[in-house]
Image (cartoon, rainbow, N blue to C red; front, side, top):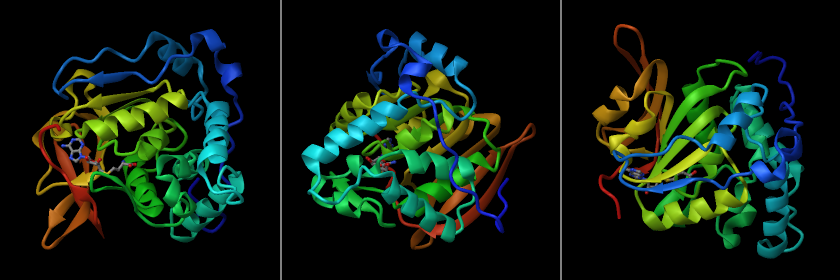
Length: 296
Ligand code: SAH
């Protein structure tokens, strides 16, 4: 399906919120303000039932809310005339990602759907679909689209349209990648150590009504034990080494992708867990914010 000679247009996600669940069943984005090692309740029952019924690849209920949120925010927050709520702007971004070699149709479809401009500061919204990282406050950055795509492509490993059962993200930041992940997995946990960023992304993601995503305020170096093991783990912050908890919480058959310090820079490291152990490979050089321990 990843035929490099015949690129296909991104797959449409045709279901609307209403077709998946009546309004009364909608649940807000759950949040746990607790250390990552602490207890977390399972995904809301409503979310579970929706996810169970949803066809593969159609896991983010709010096709319509995402779009509505985009329109609302664009009306209030973006300079007139930019038209960032337009599908076309994102289509161009996805075309550029294809040109840069991204082949995974699931990743491309998800990035086509998530309104990246809503996750950055109004003043930066007109750069949201350029292939550039942008500041999100507290000295943190949203990764550039090509790096997000590459990391997620590595995490999926060409598995096709079947969603990953459980994904852990370390470093929620502004919540953009978490929203993309919610389209790629049945259940997504995203951990952020900085409370203001956790709170801000929770508010935005709540407005998008993404039911299969749980945000946790905690130290992601500890992973998130209560929902382990994970079929995919992706870190948006790079440390000197991979924290042991991530390897422990990786399911057999699972794939972990993280930036790790190498020499004066960082490289993407992929770890695949097999029946007998871990297979590690190193990929391109990257530049992520540092992985830090503790919460603040
Ligand atoms: N995926 C994010 C990228 C945010 S930048 C996005 O789409 O915006 C990386 C984030 O990792 C920062 O917000 C930083 O605070 C967070 N981080 C760094 N170390 C962490 C840790 N130990 N646990 C959780 N989050 C961490």
